[in-house]
Image (tube, rainbow, N blue to C red; front, side):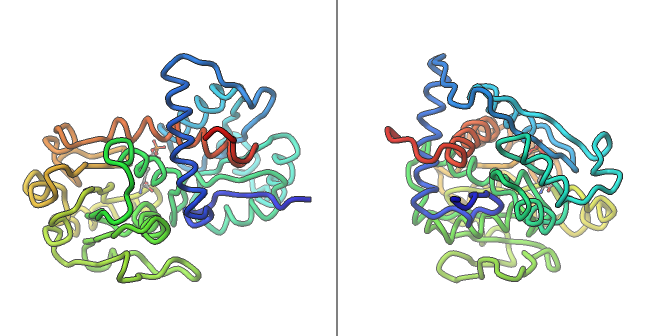
Amino acid sequence: MKPVRHYLQFSDLSQDECLYLFERSRVLKRLHADGELYRPLVGRVMSMIFEKSSTRTRVSFEAGMAQLGGHAMFLDTKTSQLGRGEPIEDTARVLSRMSDVVMIRTFEHSLVERLAAYSRVPVINGLTNEYHPCQVLADILTWMERHGSIAGHTVAWIGDGNNVARTWRQAAHLLGFKLNIATPVGYEIAPLAGDTPNDPAYFQAFDDPMEAAKGADIITTDVFTSMGFEAECEVRREAFKQHRVTAALMAVAQPHALFLHCLPAHRGEEVDAEVIDGAQSAVWDEAENRMHVQKALIEFLLLGRIAEA
Ligand code: CP
Ligand code: NVA
């Protein structure tokens, strides 16, 4: 039996597979825009487990599965047996006998790895404390739609060294671009066993956000306080005061620089309204691209490469 492919972190794809997915996303996006029905997944089902809140992830997977002719089911901790202590290994065995693909958003990444280890079908990470691999696929697709390859370009991450930042570091390594990162002291990307190292060819840490942003092609950030860290909210608000995306910061980047944010955003905190609502912001395309790139990902995991892409 062929081993099941999962998508738990960005580095689970090869560079070639990743570039294929971007191409395929554009094909699927175009078909959808043209109103052409493309339903290779009739009769196929996705189970979606949400242990944290979501707007974009839920809607993009659910809409994407429907567009591909399949169906997506929403499970949360409150109304499933997960909240009453059913082990994730048992949940994996049961769900994967009744669905063709499982998506999970949860806290510890190790839980997703345990789910995948016991699943007969592909598992997709829809965000953990450590990674958000679907998000960065959409972010890079958004850049590529406007400017082509991201290889050799520079992305500046301003703020928390969180799940999205850690995923950007993997992407930089895989796709050959540079990640400049400016985090407050104590909020750097925490080292994880087996993760992509801080290779100076692809990664540079800065104390000053302005230095990180200078000449960058993409400026991106995220909330001060990610889901699961709410108890630190006040301390973080203070700590992140100098690590915000303002018009002054955008001004030191390339004139063509895009502003990206995974959303939800807090105007006046990590980003000023004039930036996120301004001409350089691509956040709405970025949000929409979650759906297109995830359709390509689901298709790839379930059906393999499609010849005409
Ligand atoms: N960016 C993102 O994952 O959004 P949601 O939390 O709304 O799913
Ligand atoms: N870093 C944020 C991303 C939300 C989409 C969080 O984990 O809450």
